[in-house]
Structures are given as C-alpha cells and as structure tokens.
Length: 261
Image 1 (cartoon, one colour):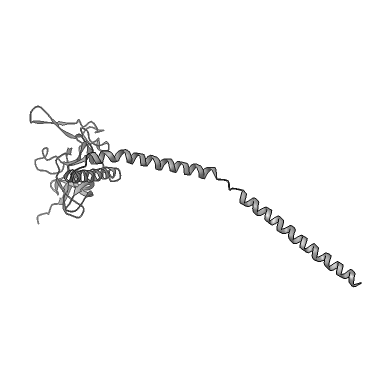
Image 2 (image 1 turned 135 degrees about the horizontal axis):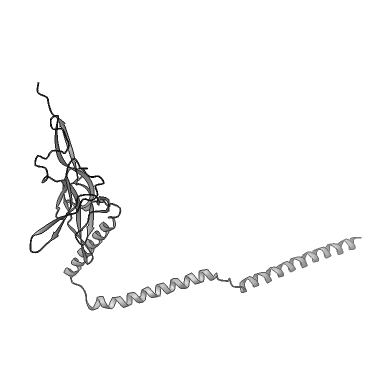
C-alpha cells in the first residue's frame, strides 16, 4: 500500500515538472519571434517625413544661393538706414491703404489722379469741376441740373459741390487741429486724398437769405453745415484714420423777428 502511494506521488511530481518545462518552452519561442519581427512603418508618416526633408533641403539651397551676393556687395551703413526707413514707410502706407475699405467715407477719395465726377451717392448735386485749361487759367464747368422732376421747383438755399484737392488741416472729433495727409506713397504710385465738399453758393443771393421765407416775420440765412468723415491725418505722435469735419450741406437758419410794441 505504501509503495503504491509513493508511485502516485512521483508521477504527480513528474507531470508537474513536464507541464512547467512545456510552458517555459512556449514562452521562449514567443519571445524569440517578437525579437525577430520588425514593426511596420505607417505610409502616411513616411510621406510626411520625406516632404519635410525635401523642404528643408530646398530652403538650405536657397540660402546658399543668396549668401554669396551679400558677401560680394556688403551694404554700407547709410544704405542700411535708408532701406529701413523706406521699408517702414512702405509698410505704414500699405497698412493705411488696406484700412481704407473699413474706414471708407463716400466723401473721401484716395486716387492717383483728380476725380472728374461726383461720388455715386451724390450724382444729383450741383457739381462744379476744376479742370486745367490753357496756360495758368482754370475754367469752371458746371453740370446741368436736369435732376429736377418738376418745373418751378427750387431749393431753399443754393449750394455748390466740388472736390477739394488742397486741404492741409482740419478739426478732428476732439476739437483739435490735425494735419491732413496730402499724399501717400504706395510703391511706385503716389496716392492723393480728395474731399467732396458741399457749401452754400453765396454768388446767387446777395443778402444770403433763404428762398421762399416770409421776411416780415422771419429772419433767414443760408449757412454751411459740417459733418464728420474718416480721413488720413497726422498729429504729433502718429498717423492714422480719424474723424474730421468738412462742409457737407447748406441749410437754412431761421429766427423769429421781434415785434415792436
């Protein structure tokens, strides 16, 4: 009986040893296969790496091509300062012209040549254009006022509209006198600033009173009114777009006459 039990114990121990050895063998095989296998590369990452390497190589070639020209002709100190000032002025002018679309006013025009017609929003005005004639004289041509729909219809005050090309100063929204930029350098072109202004036409009325007003009871006078527009201005510290006042209309001012008692 003892011998039979001993034989069973020996068989159990031997089976356990064989099972452990088999597991170790399988583990060794799996480890060797993992070492021999290489990870596969992602094709997208490989393409991105190749493109980056090609871009870096091209930029290096461009730098190598540009460097000899600088070494052969080194710029002087004065040329360097002039280039910096010209570049800064060009950058400022370009930025100001880009802002023109945002700060655009119908009565302000930036152009390389004098305008010959009024703005689209003011085609119905009595426009007067100044054009160079023979010699130093200038002829004044007035557009026909065919916009009146009914005969016998007159405005209370006569006005005249024209492009002002020589404005140098103006009053801003803070009540301070600022300098108007007459021209802006934009590369090879010189952009000038023009203002479309409307004023009272004092040549038609000697008294300056309003038309159609009862003079027995009212005192009347045609006065030029101003509004604010955006324009390129310069003060002591900066250059930029500011609100300034220009003449934009002619209105009738009334006051009641005092009766004598």
